[in-house]
Each structure stands twice: as C-alpha cells, then as structure tokens.
Image (cartoon, rainbow over all chains, first blue to last red; front, side, top):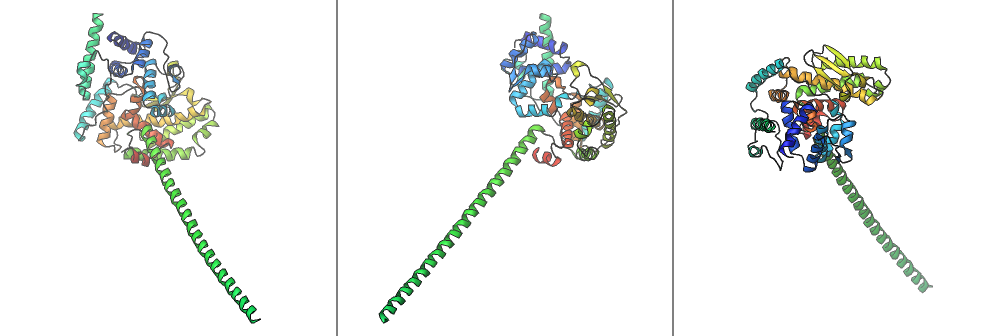
Length: 174
Length: 254
C-alpha cells in the first residue's frame, strides 16, 4: 500500500474501528506485514468497497456479520487462519473472541501501575521481554530505514513515534 | 510254518519300526510346529506391543502438539494451580449433573440465582473483592460480548441476554466468564500489591507490563489471546473446563 493509504487506514482505524493511539500503530504495523492479496482487501475496506476474502471456507463477511468482528480485525483473523489454522480455530472454538477486553486504565491506575512496576523492578532479576514481531513487509515506505534497528521494545516504540510524526507530516502536506 | 512265522515276525518288526519312525517324525513335526507357532505368536505379540507403544507415543505427541497450539507458553504458577483445583472442585460439586444439564432445566430467575452463587464462591476461591454483579444488555455491536469486570467499583458485569438464552452453551459460557473476569481482577490486585497471592515477581512484572500495553481483540485476535494476562486467564479457564490438566501444561509447555 502506498503511504497515502496508510494515512487513510490510520483515520479508518481511529474513526471507524474506534482504536486509539498505540493501538492504531500496532494494528498498522500488523497490516503492513500482510501478504499483497490481503493488503488489496484492506484497501477495498478503507475505500468502502466489498471485501471478498475467504480462507479455508471462512469468509470475511461471516466474521463481520456473524461473529461481530470489525473489518480490519476480521482481515487479521483471516491471516491468522492462513498461517496457523489450528490455533485460530481453537481460539474461536474456546469462544475467546466473545470476551470483552480489560477496561482501559484510568489516570490514577496508570500512576498506581507505574509505582508497582518500579517496586517490582527491584525484585525481578531478569526483566521479561514481550515476544517481538518480525517485520516481514516487503514494500515498506515510511520506516524502511528504521526497520533494522527494531530490536528492542523501546526502539520499536521509537519507530512508532517516528512513524506517527511522518504520518502527521504527510497529512499536513496533503 | 516256521518260515511263515519268521516272515510274520519280520513284518511285525518292520511295522513296529515304521510306526515308531512315523511317531518320531510326527513328534518332531509337532515339536517343530509348536515351536514355529510359538514364534509366530511371539512375533505377533512383539509387533502388537511395538505398535501399541508407537500408538501411545503418537497419541502423546499429538496431545503435546494440541496443548502447545491451544495453550501456547502457558505454565500455571503455583497459586493458579491451587486456585484452579479449588475452582474445578467447586464446579464439579455444584454442577454434579454437568453445567449445561443443570442450567437447561432452570428458568431465568433460577439461572440468575445460580450465577450469583457462582460469583460468590468464585470470589472467595480467587480471593477477590466483588461488590456487585450487574446484568446488562449490550448494544448491537457488542452483542457477542460475555461480560467484563469494572475495577473502579469492583463490579462484575454479565451479558443478560446470554444468561437467559435458550442456547445453554452460551449460558454455560457465562459461568466460565465469571472465573475469567475474576482472574483479571486477581491479576490487577496482585500486580498493584493489594493482595499477596504468592505469585513470583517475574509473573507480576510480566502482567504489569501487559497492563501497560494491553492488546484489545480489535487489534488482532492472535496477539490478544497470546498476551500474558489473557494467556493466563484463558489457560486457567481451560483447566477448570477440564480441557487440559496442570500436569499436561507443565509437561508440554517447557
């Protein structure tokens, strides 16, 4: 997808799928790594066209209509179904998709959590690191030069920040 | 006469020798066949034994693969092992006929009473504070949602439509939702130090980081399901559902 499409995707995720801040960047990061046939379908969605994607007998349409998934979530699920069919189907079987997410943290809770993390840092010898995603995108436009540096979570968040800036700059230029 | 007797005697001797030889041959043949048959039987048993061993190994390998696919990286900590055991015992006793079977025969009021009782017991087992249970009718776009725990007032919210549904599968799911959501309440209480359940600091740190960077299902179901807070809550749920045992999880998820 061209950069302009990512800007549209950003707006789409923010306005239609009601994602916020980091959630949007994490989702864009995942979308960027989708195969071309999936990217084409993402383009169709943000342009308001019908998506015809189907994997292993499961269609985009039924995920949206019957399982209540938002469009981009459905596309990402189909990609999971393509790459790890057993895990994806087990997830649906255990009705995990029906669980509500944990409520976002309030400002007070964020502070409380930050204090707890400081306290825990003193107790933990080795800090657990979240599993890093491997960037497989072939046609990256915006953060190509930073991709190589994306080794730690901290660096990754810097990448997101720079990506954020580049999107804003692009939006302004448009 | 003497000659004839001699002839007869010789014939008798010959016949006897022949009979003896025949008997000997038969004996040897029988012995050979017995040994051959014993060997055949032995080989059959050996092969059967080996294939049964293979079947067990394949079955175990299959189970290992299944557990690792369904519950990746989930190794229940000691506090969760104990809580899961107690929760499962409670559910097995409370629903001795089976959860679905019990709920199927209940009307809406009885189901609400049952859920209330489950919440009361689950909050005691998991040692979390639940001030109230609220039943709500979600908006259309959240119809599939089972429920959630509100940390601000320690209230458990459950989808009313599912509890009163004719589809007993969905009603049963609400029983497990209670435990799932209260597990999140327990995780929060543990991380913030409100309660000490005995979790190792590494687990608490992992959860704390995850609370800071929580991934909602809208960002992708794969990542949502595999993040530490959900991995542990869904894993816990699987144990009390009887889908997997603590032993299997510890054995296969090394």
